[in-house]
Amino acid sequence: MSVTVAIVGRPNVGKSTLFNRLVGRKIALVDDTPGVTRDRREAEGRIADLKFRVLDTAGYEDVTDDSLESRMRRQTELAIAEADVILFMFDARAGVTPLDQRFAQVLRKAGKDVHLVGNKAEGREAEPGLIEAFKLGFGEPIALSAEHGLGLSDLHSIVSQAI
Ligand code: GDP
Ligand code: MG
Image 1 (cartoon, helix red, strand yellow):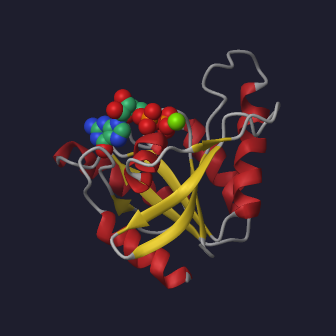
Image 2: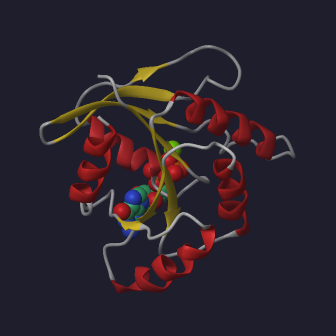
């Protein structure tokens, strides 16, 4: 497992759904270290023949005070530092939100391979969001449905290029 893939993005876009799909029935390792890594999950992910290490970022959804943003930022920065491939997920049905734009700012500074992933793209309602996402500055988004398993062949080609 030489390649590490990090799934980052604001809460509720479907990061954990993709993580679970990539990891399959395996039990994810949970890091119980207090602090920012507490709720981060990592495991071996798979798409067909490809095997890689996958990181899910979370742990800030329940924080309601103004530490949310800094906590989220630290989680994202930790994942970025470890990752070879960054999947920047947004909700294609919801379109681009101000929080997505702040994530984009953090990711631009990373100087790494960032791929924009428009999740929940299993219907036509996703089209406007997929077009709007160009303004995030990472080019054309991959249309994905983590829930329905659509778009995995595009993920396969991205990950295989990083190996
Ligand atoms: P996270 O906070 O980014 O980890 O998001 P979750 O994986 O917890 O998913 C948030 C919500 O989006 C849940 O209700 C999921 O069922 C839903 N969701 C995830 N992927 C998809 C998808 O491909 N299509 C649709 N329509 N809903 C999805
Ligand atoms: Mg999650």
